[in-house]
Length: 126
Image 1 (cartoon, helix red, strand yellow):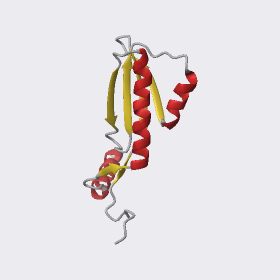
Image 2 (spheres, rainbow, N blue to C red; image 1 turned 120 degrees about the vertical axis):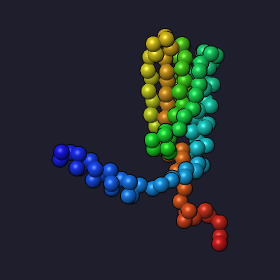
Image 3 (cartoon, rainbow, N blue to C red; image 1 turned 135 degrees about the vertical axis):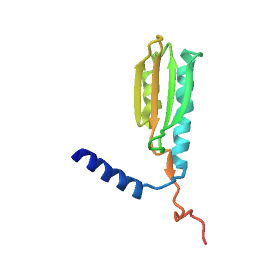
Image 4 (cartoon, one colour; image 1 turned 30 degrees about the vertical axis):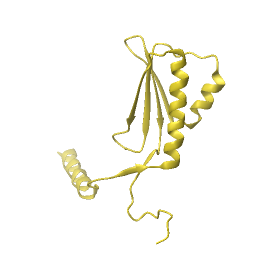
């Protein structure tokens, strides 16, 4: 019973102080950096496997991150230095074998989006 009371208290606090809506906008410098890296990674992987399946997704929980999933049968390279250069802008990297014989490479980029702040200065004079 004690845990239930604590849960209800936390739930009440969460509902009281949770923002109703959060609008996200591009963090322009980071967004451009991430998009350049994404396209270079896609090009790098599809050179080996033209049938690679590519998908983008936003982090639905936090909302400020962007992920790229590449599912491929062949992820191999002899150009390790180029791959390392491509991954310099990446914040997270997961490689997971799939049951259909492919491998899923997921790269994540943090802070691609940021919460919109209406009082945020835009750099223009008022």
